[in-house]
Length: 503
Ligand code: HEC
Ligand code: HEC
Ligand code: HEC
Ligand code: HEC
Ligand code: HEC
Ligand code: HEC
Ligand code: HEC
Image (tube, rainbow, N blue to C red; front, side, top):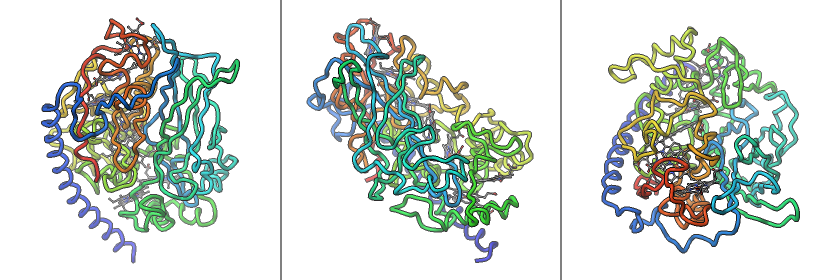
């Protein structure tokens, strides 16, 4: 195909996608209304949720608790990998684990010494270098020799120790390399790691739990850039990667394809900055988020969860279903919290509005922004993210599905949900609520039946830990002050329906 015809085909494809996406969006909206009604009709406490969806209380599922409990979670809910480093790299492997260990009591105590905390991968998840080629190219892409099956920070894939973050009273294991496939090459986006606390004095096991290390290589780039995914809908094939580089070279005048074919694949973040890995990029070049979202928003303006799902691993037709939390169960999607794709793109572009490339991109997006939309608030990529309390208000009240958190971003990295702690004491939000996009209860569709392991084993149902009279997961008796960790902790938990789960 000539280049002209190829991009024409791409454009047509993008148009078809757009139409499809609009239909899906209408369906999602309906779904939202339907679930909203169902929710109002369900009994307080949700003890009789007929669908048996996650969140249903089945007291027998809880296991007897010992003297210690571990709350462990992955920091961002879904780690994405661009898994074909032979051509280029932007998301390198590395899952970040957090944990808090509690000695049960009146009051409970966060344990910061006298214990050792370890992680261990499931049996068939010990050798990521069998399935992803990051290590073959790290010397060129990251300019660093990294031993196979070891992360950028030296953590081993198979097992290792957490270290104490004193200020947070939390334990962290940063940069564990996890492959989106198991060692046999099967797609496995939610490997369950075991976390154990032992007494350093005598090696006695104090507590043990499981947490998922969500990871995905499900990138829909092939839908428009050609090629077929490597395995089962997941993985960036050589053909897709080549087309992406050829487009970049054609539009920008770079030489990325030839360089890759000569054995010198590029790290996109050397030029396009990204705050998640503190990559500064080049000062006069768009950030990765502004470049990717800004360029593509013109081809997929409106839409639904499926729009974001063209690149993020969130398509209901996919294998991974990344945004799978309680909010999806209430009929919400990415756009309730992040805005539509053009809005989302406009906000990061505004951060660099002095660059001609940003001005051009903003100009292209104008027709797709809602009527009356003047200017997006400049947003720093990976830092200015949705604030839970812009919908749930400062008192952690129930929210309306009509609210949005767009333009009401968290302003400091340290206050992102994943790093934030409760109003009093040192319990972190995610210890009781789970990872972002996997806020308990998360959907168990697609066979990920252990996704709510901790709340289910600790209190017998998947909801916020401590909900509906279960403060005794950590306290020995129900505390009188119900507003301690935050206000309204005793408001009733109502399980969502997950009527929009893929079948
Ligand atoms: C809905 C269709 C669609 C999807 C999905 C898609 N792209 Fe594109 N992409 C396009 C179109 C259309 C162009 C413009 C092609 C041209 O200019 O010839 C493009 C161009 C690009 C360019 C060149 C940008 C420039 O101007 O320098 C890059 C890089 C790129 N895409 C990367 C990606 C990556 C990475 C993914 C997956 C994460 C992806 N695309 C997914 C449609 C898509
Ligand atoms: C050598 C530096 C360099 C590298 C490496 C690089 N880019 Fe770019 N890219 C640019 C420049 C320069 C532009 C032009 C826009 C600008 O000035 O920011 C651009 C433009 C883009 C655009 C289009 C933005 C728009 O609004 O038109 C996308 C998308 C993009 N790059 C994605 C990527 C991806 C994905 C990779 C890795 C495969 C990559 N880039 C690697 C320098 C680079
Ligand atoms: C064309 C592919 C593509 C589409 C479509 C897309 N994204 Fe992204 N998104 C990416 C890539 C690639 C990154 C990683 C950028 C980086 O490395 O900084 C990213 C990063 C992000 C980030 C983190 C960086 C930031 O800006 O704060 C958020 C949030 C995000 N996307 C949300 C969304 C939402 C919401 C949608 C749908 C409205 C969406 N994306 C649609 C490709 C896409
Ligand atoms: C209920 C609100 C909500 C919904 C729905 C939602 N997000 Fe997010 N998103 C957040 C919050 C909050 C953060 C910041 C979390 C943190 O502290 O890391 C975030 C962060 C992100 C990030 C940056 C990585 C991270 O976790 O920090 C990406 C990428 C992203 N979201 C993509 C998406 C996509 C794609 C969808 C839909 C499939 C989606 N989000 C749906 C609230 C939401
Ligand atoms: C865009 C608005 C919005 C944002 C942002 C948002 N939520 Fe929600 N959330 C809702 C709505 C609407 C519901 C369903 C009604 C309800 O239960 O409040 C909900 C439900 C919940 C529930 C289930 C309550 C129950 O009884 O079933 C929890 C827990 C929750 N949200 C926590 C969070 C956390 C934690 C964050 C930040 C990571 C967050 N929400 C961000 C709107 C939002
Ligand atoms: C996951 C463990 C955990 C759960 C569940 C939990 N707490 Fe706590 N709580 C703690 C810890 C640990 C402390 C000690 C202060 C700190 O470090 O945060 C504490 C302290 C308190 C205190 C102050 C000390 C005291 O005992 O008077 C109150 C009050 C309290 N919690 C109320 C509650 C209520 C009400 C619930 C249920 C709605 C609850 N907590 C659920 C871990 C938990
Ligand atoms: C000790 C456990 C614990 C900690 C720590 C905790 N929460 Fe909660 N949270 C709960 C419980 C229990 C509820 C009440 C049940 C409910 O509302 O579904 C709740 C309710 C909420 C709700 C309201 C959900 C709804 O619509 O009903 C939001 C939003 C929320 N928490 C966010 C947070 C944020 C943000 C943090 C950190 C600043 C945090 N929580 C820390 C246990 C906790």
